Image 1 (tube, one colour):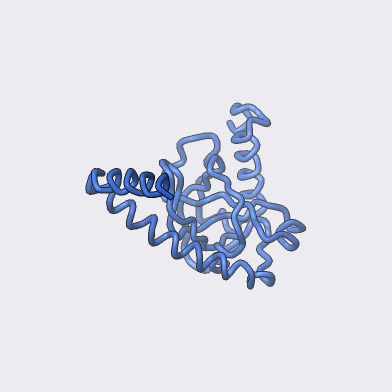
Image 2 (image 1 turned 120 degrees about the vertical axis):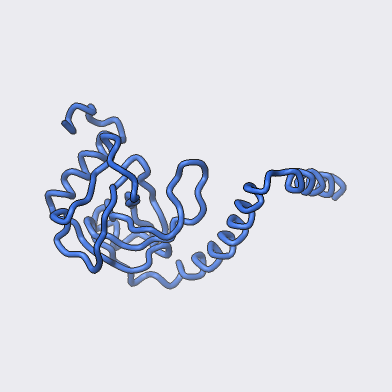
Length: 169
């Protein structure tokens, strides 16, 4: 018990001595902890969500660490349809407003979509591929063309080191 008190005291001293910008980050993390609890409860009820490979969904990515993408943003479903149907998780590539800068990026253009509910622009970032609970998914907002999906699959292989970067050229 005494050890726990010392540990809490150390943490409190740490929190009290951080920069103002870090205090805002702490507030965001505490808020995210509450959202995580909501998602944990939602996860028990999402058995009827069946995203398909190539679809774009909104997704609550949560709070980031370092350069990870965070907040609610569009994501591209990259996991296979059998797994998407039977598993409580789905694998996604986040979509960012950032420019295409790496061989693991695929820029989305108007002709990248088979259909879209709203105008989606940005770059698919395969180096930030994540496996997430389906509870994080919001709603389907679009679907990429088979040609765009092939480009994304190639960027995933590059990200995983399964083929050389020259294959993208």
